[in-house]
Length: 328
Image 1 (cartoon, rainbow, N blue to C red):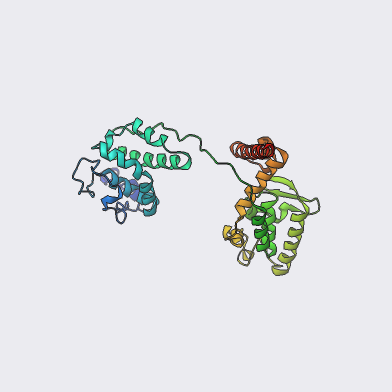
Image 2: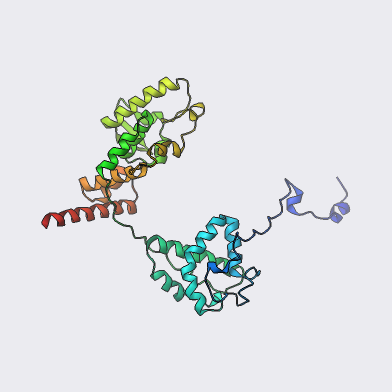
């Protein structure tokens, strides 16, 4: 070991150089998205930075700083989607203010009050991103979007599928695996991910039981018929596969992983009744037949409280509309 005075006099290296792999240098700042220097995007008559409107590439420009930050994290396409979303908000602000810090909380609320549903939610998310980054860069001193709640999203009334649309989707599936997937979605309202995760042990043919995401369901005759048809095909096509999943294909039969989501959705591509729509229609049908009771829906399908209430409200509205038409 070296003497004490040599160890003391030795310069102390940074922590990342003392052990392990040296730390990589920070990446250079993301360049502005392509086409950013087109001021017509905002259609503004003033620049919020208080500088010459032609100097849109200035380092203190909040738009450019925010765009660089967002493009670095989420990509250039996301930047343009964000900008297109808040352009109707920026136009009135730019006609009345010279600087971004002049925007107040009331100004934000006025713009949000004119929006509803997902449009309001998305606009608030974009404004939060903009003002948060502007405050971080020192362009503004107070974030006017802080403590503004998005609020509960308003959903429309769910509508049942037309019988001809369902029949078209049923006629479109011809393979044993696709027919089983159709039954799992249309009868048991199973999500695509839950269908992909199904194991062979989840199918109890002797006791007519099926376990989907930990919930035991009775195996109806239609699903049982398609399951037996698929198992017969599976044993004949891949007799030596070690994959424990119920659904496999020529790729996953060589391993132990599940099939992809595209494998399930591809047979229904272009159909009026997709796999997700069949699942939604099954849950809505349950609410229409057995009454708009959210507790019943949560028990049968394992829905969370808000989703069960949404289905129950839609079923109640449809039943009320049917009753009004009968009275006319």
